[in-house]
Amino acid sequence: MNYQIVIKNIDTVNEVEGYWSDEDFVQLLEKFNYPDGATADKNSLPELLEMAISDYEPNEAAEIVLKYKFNDELNDGQIEQIAHNMLIDKVCEEYPVIGMQGTLFHVNQLLFKAYNGKFPNAKASVVHFSMTPTDGEGQKLTAENVLKLLNSGLSDRNLIKRLFETQISGNIPFPEAEGIVWELTTKDDVNYNLVTSENWINKDDITDSEFEAVLEDIEEEA
Image: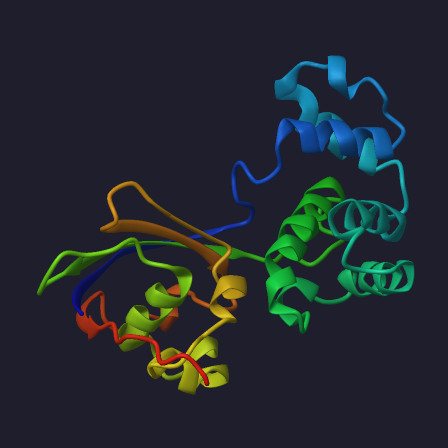
């Protein structure tokens, strides 16, 4: 199916609003030995957590937050290693399991804020765009669909194109798309907001703000 794509804007942000819920804050406060989070004013929870975190050494705090988010996926040794690396590098851009990079970004930025910059400052991109079918009725697009359609407007220097050229440009499955795209929202199946790492898509990656692209049917592997 043919689509008309319009890239409206790309916002570069230090954090994604709404990622951490009030329940997250309350549970994390408990893990940082502040048991009164449940009765605290909801608006004060982020600030209370920052203060509670800052009472710990940065690597200790990183381990606590990482264990809260990845207790089922990582063992203690892996968590300790990531916590150490987070103080040196942008692990959220380099971690080999792409599906974990989004969560690592949110953890990194929580710690970056609590420690006033002791952790590297990673950034996310919020891409605002529309994808309008030109030859039929559209559908609710998936992360895979969206990246394949955006391909026509991305620079050849774009990291996704360089690492996944075959997947993003062909009619084959692109399972990594679900990890590259952290959030994809739409209210009308035409106008979309996409959240990802600045490392995956940034303002310089867009060569055309308006272009056409064809969404091919995926040929499933036998």
